[in-house]
Length: 267
Ligand code: MLT
Image 1 (cartoon, rainbow, N blue to C red):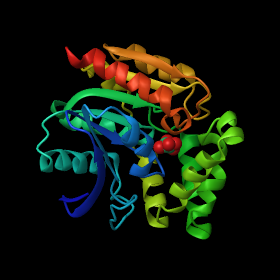
Image 2: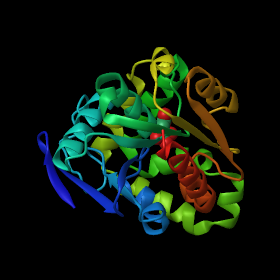
Image 3: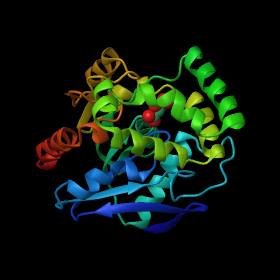
């Protein structure tokens, strides 16, 4: 489906009816990241998975500043308005979590609850920033294949890479489908994103922090600290998954998500 939000046509997928849950994909993916969830999750919630500006079917002139976390958050608010949704559960994976923080910072009243999966509140360290600039330079020369080469070994757990070639292939296809300009602009935007750590104690909605036990990108201690600093947060660990638990261990991911949504239903 497509709707005009701000200056672009935003593409999104949806399934089910009921209380809305918005899935925000990570970098460098698109809404197809959530296709197992949209196919299999119970129909009593309304699952909405947009392609962020520049990704998947949502094409945009990806200027170096156009893909900030704040810009994505404003697009999502416009999408919620277009769908006449006042508040939704926001589930962000990795970069999607950074967008969820930007949404909380500017529009907390639109957030019913948060699911923060494989993500962190802190801004980039200097080393992480330098690595992003280096990767952006390689992408300009070599295209998306450079991202697949750098990221695939860290995105998925060793078990997934060994036993689930179809998942590796899906991830590679999503990476390679992302336009070069988007990849570069998104790396710049992530490098410049603000520190969201001061926001954590202000999050006064129920929150689920999810991490894969084998996540090579977000250390366990960082996820634990994030869950401790958010007043009403619970942390769940998905065994055998790396950075993308919803693809790597979808049954377990879905189970944790549904348990959380059921638990907050009466609150
Ligand atoms: C993601 O999965 O969205 C990225 O790993 C986020 C990042 O590079 O910080």
